[in-house]
Image (cartoon, rainbow, N blue to C red):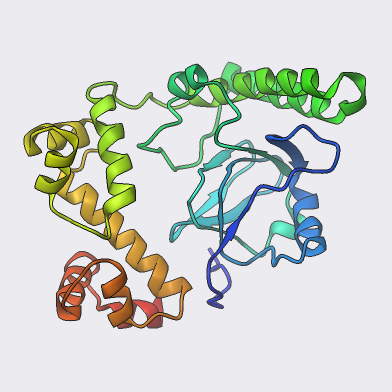
Length: 291
């Protein structure tokens, strides 16, 4: 498999900008149109971006390559990939000839009950999903209906149209959620609080004891919750998040390794080098040179 382009432009946050006249919150588009649309909006379609919205990407007859947080995936015909807000994405060179659909929607567009039932909260199962049999037919019909109603903007009042799209998107999300094994239910509440705290404070502290004290749990409770949800201990989960941010900064920014260390709360750059090398087998400088 070929590599996605090797330039290193800085990662850029991508805000949600609805199409004129469309209901704010959701958008359905052919993948083949995404390349030209990006150029019209002054965006490089192959640049690393950090969207603030969800993206459901489905491939039809041709495969598509896309990288998400340093992992490259190939969507084979019939497969779907769900990219969440805040994840760094980068399309491969086959985007211009892509055959498929992309559904974009804001984080607050779906009802909380759907978010919970579809397991949209972390931990995420990032691998592509390939519905089979009746699941594939259900997903196909859900996409077709959503696409049809999205294109029928003038047939209903805008507010009513938005509610129709919300309902149909809920069906699609639930159908895709049914394809995979549901995330473990045990300790999900505890883990969600822990995850939110790590997202907020991973550059402040890497000590599980600090998160436990702030959240009102014991370190053992956080570890049980993290293991049930991700298969990783609480300490490993925190370190994984710090390592991901370190990779993002090293690869997508012009910051030196010393500056990255400071950004992530390491008082001594040598401690950051040891942390990084222990988990990747290479130094921060070597990672930047050959990632």
